[in-house]
Amino acid sequence: MKKFALTILTAALAIGLAACGGSKSSDKSQLDLVTPKTLTIGLEGTYQPYSYHEDGKLKGFEVELGQKIAAELNLKPKFVETKWDSLIAGLDVNKYDLILNNVAKTPERAQKYIFTSAYTSGKSQLAVKKDNKTITSIADIKGKKMAQSVTSNNAANVKKLGGVIVPVDGFAQSVTLIEQGRVDGTVNDAASFAAYLKQKPNADIKLMSVGDAITPVPARGLLRKDEKPLQKKVTAAIEKLRKNGTLKKLATKYFGGDITE
Image (cartoon, rainbow, N blue to C red; front, side, top):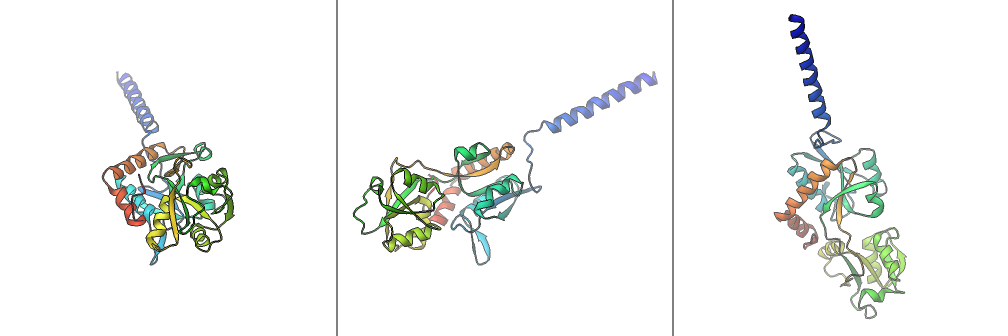
């Protein structure tokens, strides 16, 4: 009788342990974070107004966005600054959980990574010198000198439209070349122009719509494909921040207007 009872007890314990083990391994909602209770975010830290340093402190639109997202997830935010050339590679080696760095969703990236919902509109604009009378629409850039970063989506779009690429190191140099009359214009995202004109409202450039000639490329958070639980939570946080007006307030603070819609 004792032996029979012991056998039943042993079997019950085995079943109970198996059930517990099975429950743990099948819990798809668990967040596999680089550091427990911490949302580690990769960004450049040199891309104003998205992320940059001022008075020795890291700040910017995506910095505050990351802090807000972490708060929604009841996690502590931690930022890891990395140069763009190795930023995405850092995600592959678990250097951070999420990248917030004005990253666009492309077919090539979508093969290897997953994305959150968009947090900027990604609309492009064309800039030319204020007294320019030869370019009145995006169609007029054909054969014209356009200042662009050669590996950017903007350069690819300009090439498709027949523009002649003049290589530059960054956005500010593009505007400088326009003001100096050394190029005819540049195409970039509306957010970059908004941020620049907020700092330099007297810049000698005027902006034009590109209409349907260039498809908007909004910024999204980038994650590894094995991070679907985190992807869902971050996306839900972004949408909550959009609905309660926080996203718009952050955009207005750093860009001088709402660049999220």
